[in-house]
Length: 486
Image 1 (cartoon, rainbow, N blue to C red):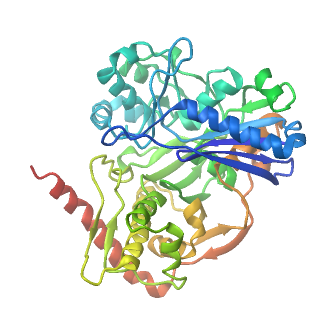
Image 2 (cartoon, helix red, strand yellow):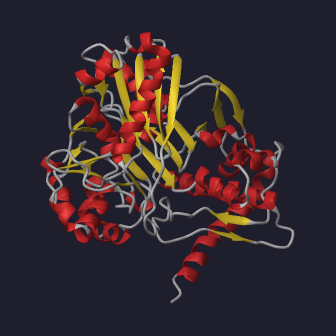
Image 3 (cartoon, rainbow, N blue to C red):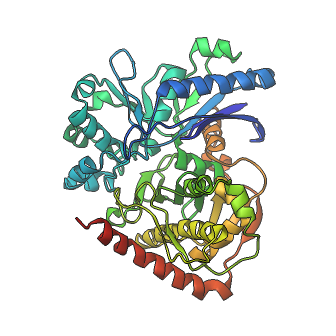
């Protein structure tokens, strides 16, 4: 048996698989986000531990015998979070999360230092970890002076599980401190934010052993001694492992809280000017390119709450027939945007409203706005030489067939929908636990899922979607000009 723990923004998921990679069971516990100021987004790391304890307690109550057979544990987690520990491993302040934009000024300052893009292969985005530490140094100097270790969220879970300060390459690539081509920390970039390598965790590949489960925890859940904990991965790389997106040219689109367009590659091909992320993958000698939009399913969640409905009800009201794009456009920049704009200050809007704009009209606008933001990401990936032939669709939003049709038409690419099953980040984490514990060939483990259906773009709607996309593209410079007015 193998266990995957996925620490997301809205919840922690524990998933148990057997040696044939069949899912035995899973448990998800909700997490909440604190927003103590404009652009702020934080969580208490103690809540992560409590959720993991409850999830594993629940698995033990239902599958005690299976837990005794666990040989490996893999970890996946929300990226970029700044978890700051003192010399006694006490948490110094709430973790600053990936979607926190308070450090936009610090990010711009670091990004102006040419070493960051040259060494990391990426823009220094406000959501990344390094500018968060620069913000803490300026605004909370007492806490900054006591920092003994900086851990990413899943690596704080690892510390609890194993007692080891370890991270992995894929997650570390999102800090702005990693030499992404060499797959190691950069002493120069750390020094630029007042830190040293001794304050960072050791790094291993995602499929390698990072430590073993502490005896007290093994006894609590009836596990054997020496259970291996794999390096694991950042959530998107873990999802790629779960969907078998590990070979060059393989790609997926994810509709979660944020939206992701992810393509695997065996070469490190940075192009920071495109705002495409060039990160290490979870497997050795592999990298990936990734475009990210900050609001995907969360944009639909926001709108559903606004109109007193649920995302499922709103989507059901649209039916399943493919429709041309509507007359109302929506920019999904509720928390700023990464790819391709790198703009933490921009905010969203509806454009083209009239007296006939009803709830269904605006629902379509939200779905289309997210789809066109993903098209922006596709164009950015193309600028680096990456050209996906098709995409696997994953994430909670991928269960909405009408949304998939909109995205397929906006991207002019087919979307493959996996058969029923769990192929997300927790499954990918469990796969990494399997590889670390058994030493088997990763490519033999990380196979693509069986495809249940493929959503094809409609040729008769191509011209209409292209016109709507051009209109969408014209809105960003217009809204920036308005927001820049004194």
